[in-house]
Amino acid sequence: MLKAQALATTQQYLNRLLNEGPDRFVETYLGEWMAIANDMLGFDLMAEMRGSIMSYMEKQLAKRLPKVPPKLDEKKAKELSEKATKLAEPILAVINLRGQTLLEQAVVLGVTAYEAYITDTIDALFRLNPRLLDKFTNELNKGLKWSGISRHGKDAQEAARAFLIQKHKPLELGATKTLFARLTKIENVFGNDETERMLRRFIEYRHVIVHRAGKVDRKFREVTGSRQGLETYVELTTTFVSEGLDFLSGFVARLQARIEALGRGTAESEPPQ
Image (cartoon, rainbow, N blue to C red; front, side, top):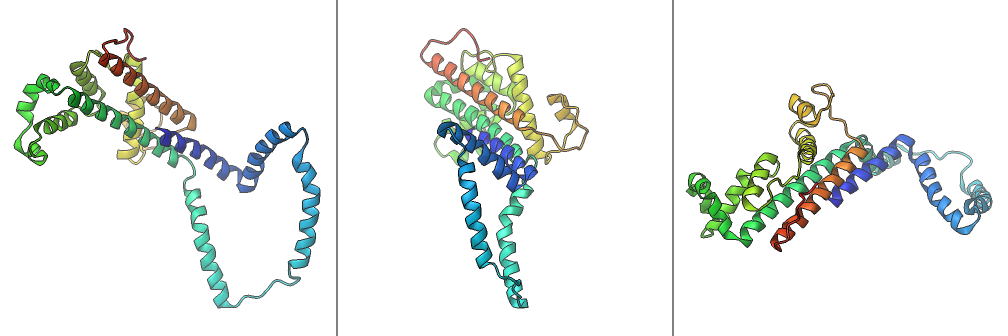
């Protein structure tokens, strides 16, 4: 989740760099740092340095710059052009990230982290108490055929865990809620409808980014409440993504605490909000 949050922050500053231009961005960014330094020192450090440095640079450049621009032969010009093109590649790559490319990846990475947590947690619950598998005897009898268990060798329990996790996909919140209710004393793993709705909304953003190249469809508008036009590209903001990632992190932390409390036999009376 930290990596996803880092992507969202990076996109914010990258857009600022591209919008303001390198000179203006560096000037304002360094200016913010210098303001802190000036407050600490009690005087304007750059003002003290600027006069002597600029005077020195002007004298040195006047000595070294040729009076007449040098002439380049065709071979040398081609060589320098190729080098310049190569050096420009990272700059062009950064320019192509303008907008929300990193924000989209932050959404995908954040939802993937949530998905991995739910999967790993369910797997751990089964491993810690294999008898929980007995609660799913009917499903296992019907769905776990030889093609599904042969690759697991002698480990039938591993095959059963894999089957049940695949059947109750973490991104399908209804199935996840049902599975946790059967495995634990947590009746509603999401706590309330609002939490479930916010999770579903963020997951739907991930779905449209991954499976529709970011283009809005009717299902996206229904789930998220968005008013964007059909087939337009989904719009993201740093604030929305950062808040969504914070929400995912908070939900996971609260759920983990509740599961640990259940393990100690001291479950909280209140579900995660």
